[in-house]
Length: 389
Image (cartoon, rainbow, N blue to C red; front, top):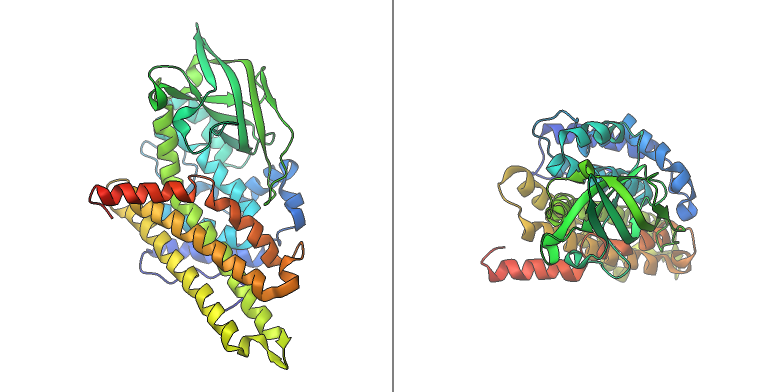
């Protein structure tokens, strides 16, 4: 086990993925260590991170060319990138994936005019994107969103609030899902592109999270946006959001695998160095058994992730059950690996700023965002009842 990241040796990849893996190994080898509290990657540094991801060509995998007639995402490539970024820095991974999450509805459902305006700058890392769905009273139940968008001639008027929004205050524009009222529940939601400097849009203070990154609240008060900024057709906002999450959800598991690999590698190195009762801890059978559990969790998670990614890339259909298994299995496994790493590190494991303490904090939110573990279990269970999986 080494300190560097190595592309997983699995049968799901093609030559283009192996070439990407080699570039990612180079990036990991030279990338800066995550800073304590993530200070270099907060609002003022998001642009530098995005520019670096563009320079290495990584943003090309999540933001297509504006004139691409049939854009898509290579989910295996996306997952490889997120595993490598997760291994090195959860904060860089967050900036990277938000460029994709917050532009995908444009190439999935948006007009040519919107795509030509917004995709190019995001692909080049010159503009930062945000995706505003979650609200103060609404999380996993997207169909219950309360923010409204009311038609007034050639504009829509937005009123409401969004909370837990990544890149709040750093983004140049946001995709906002709001209620337009075409029908009850999910059928009455639409998606809009809203520039950050639009009058009536304000940003609340940054929220300090367990895993620090730029996140906060948006408020809309009589915020008027052109009707042409609607993404797709009225009432299609829920579908656009769900299609986006379905594409990117597998890669959440990949980032978790990267964190698990980092925690496992750091723990193996620590067990070789740390002595207990006159011998290296790594020679103790109980420690070896714990390391075996960590390795098994990591490799099983990797298989779930890249199987789901391979299915998304090569087989028709959404494969929601496999995607849910990948997200659920990998994030839960990474949490177990991180917890065991902290335990084996001892007092150093709970010292603020140690690598396993940081990974422990970075992993925990992944079991909640983009569909909590409980939601993934519902998806899997429903699929089984319908005869899937």
